[in-house]
Length: 221
Image (cartoon, rainbow, N blue to C red; front, top):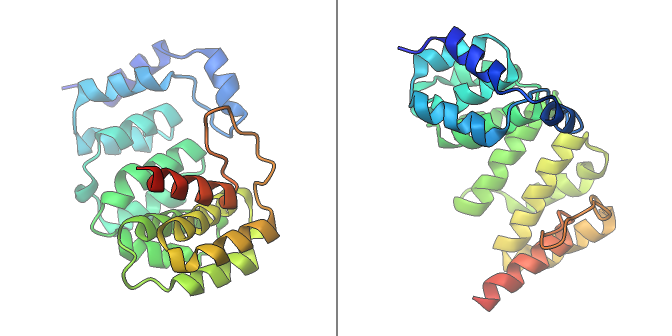
């Protein structure tokens, strides 16, 4: 059986300082190409015990592998809570929410508890889970109330929380024709991410553009 020490050694052998330099510009600190990192995880297969050991190392690349080999339903609410609060690196935080928490039976309880957390990084996870619910299971959500909060708080929110709130704003506008006009108006007035550089062929994260483009694509289908 592969040990955590062996995995760390493999990851160290794959490090590329050019990749680290690029990642550091985005707040990440690992130096392993993600395609190669995913290949390491694929060879390990699902293994919660090894995942726990890799997580405890605190190494970013090891934690990314850990997330890829975790079984979402194996982790308790308390464990997910602790891991999320310990996830300060953006890539680790994003993968943990997207790959594990969203698929966990504790997702809704954590979403509710994180939404209003005083730590904006934790709160951003709650908003990311809310955007997921708007897209997939909006029943029971107070969508106008969410727009009220976004309108009042998004412009001054810290970056990661702002991104997650903006994602929720766009999701509400895309998925709900009756609220689309208000969502676009909020985005226009706040101007959040209006000037964000967007590569050719990619959709701007500026909510009014994002909403209109996604709605147009669906209409075209």
